[in-house]
Amino acid sequence: MHSRRFSELRKEIKSIRPPQKRVFIFLIFFFAFFPLLVSKHDSYSLPTPQPYNLNEFLANSFSPFLADKQINMMQGKVKSGDTFCSILSDHGFSSLTIAECVEGFKPVFNCRKLSPGDEYSIKTDGKGDLRKITIKTDLVTIYHLRKEGEKLLPSKDKVYLSKKVTKVSGVIEDSLFGAIVKAGEHDQLAIDFAEIFAWDIDFRHDLQKGDQFAFIIEKYFKDGQLFCYGKIKAAEYNNQGKVYRAIYFKEPKGQEGYFTPEGISVRRSFLRSPLKFMRITSGYSYHRFHPILKEYKPHLGIDFAAPQGTPVLAVGDGVVVAKGWKNGNGNTVKIRHPLGYETMYNHLSGFGKNIRVGARVQQKDMIGRVGATGLATGPHLDYRMGKNGVFVNPLKEKFPPGFPVDNAYRHLFAETSRKMIAQLEGKEDSFQKMVVAR
Image (tube, rainbow, N blue to C red; front, side, top):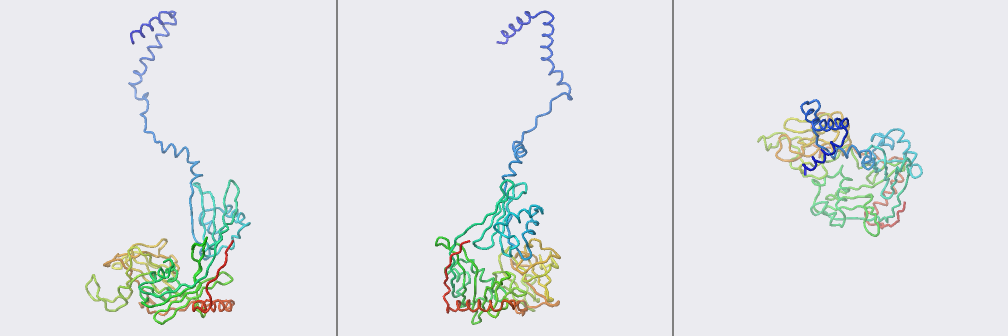
C-alpha cells in the first residue's frame, strides 16, 4: 500500500514544473524533519498535558447560575428587645433592604408589632440576596414576604382550626411523663407543665407517688385531628397535700407569664434545679465520703445524676465570671447573680455557645452539658451556690418572690384567676369550642 502511494507521489512530482518542483520538495522535507529539530530544544517543547478537572470546570462555569438556585434558611424566635430591623441587621442585611422589607410588609403586617415569642424564617440565595421572609405571630397567623424579580410580594396565610379548651388530670404513679401519657396526651405536655413550676418543684426529687395534677389546655384541631397544643391556661399540682397553682395571664401591653392565684409571678430569681429532669445522688453535706479520694470531705453542693451531654441551664440571670478547667472540678462555669448570689456548675463535658468570661446569661440559657471531667466516677453535675461568699444549700434557700401583676390590670387578672380556678375544680365547664379563622 505504501509503495503504491509512493509511486503516485513520484508521478505527481514529475508532473510539476522545475521551479515549482523545488519548492514542493522543500516543503515536504521541512514538514517531515521539523518535529525532529525542535524536539532537541526544551525551550520549544510543548507543555506536559495536565489532568482535566471536570468538577472545577463546571463549578467555575455554572456558579453564577447555581448561586441563584441555592437556598439558605435562617430561623429563630423573637427575644425581648429584638425588633424587625435589628433581626435583619444581625443577619447582615443592609439598611436599604430592611427599609424595603418594612414597606413591603405594610399591606398585611406592621413590623413594629413584632413581639417576643414570634417565630421567623429568612431565606436567601447563594449570593446572600433575600428570597423570602416568613413571620408566625401565633398558631394560626403566618405572614410572608416573597421576592420575585425586583418586586417584594406580601401575603397572609389563612388557617382554619377548631380550638377546644379542656381539662387534663391524673395521679402520679412513677413519673410525670407516664401520668401525662396515661391521661391520653403527648409527653411534650409533661415538659411544658414541669417548666411552669420549675421554681417551686423538682419533678425528680420532690415527686411522690399519689401526687395529683390538673391543667387547663388549649387544643387545636384540623379536620377532626389534633393539630397542636396551645397554651396551658392554668395548672395545679398537689404534692403530698401542698397545692401549687399557676394562672396564665397576658397583659394588654403584651407582657405575659404565669402567676399565683394572688397575682404573684411564679418566676423567681432562681430555678430549683439547673437540669430539667435528673436524680440527686449526693446532697449538701459537711461530712461526705469522697468515692475517689477515699476520705471524708465537705460536699457543699448538690450532685445531679444525668446522662452525658444533658443540657445544663443557668438557674438565674447573671454574668459569667469563670469558665474553664479547675482541678478536680473539671470543666467549670461560675456565674455571678444579683443580691450577692453565685452559682458553680462542675464536671461539664462542654460549654454552651457564647459562654465566656464577661458574657451575660439569662435564666434557662444553656451554659454547658453534663460530663465526667475532673474527679468524677461518672456523668453528673456538681451544682453549688454561694451567697455573700459563703456556700448555701440551694434546695433549702428561700429566694425572693416574683413580681406581681401590674396594678392597672389587677381587676382583669382577678377575673381570669376566678374562671381558671373554677375550671380546675370542675365548678365550670372547661369545654369550649370556637373556630379560629385568620
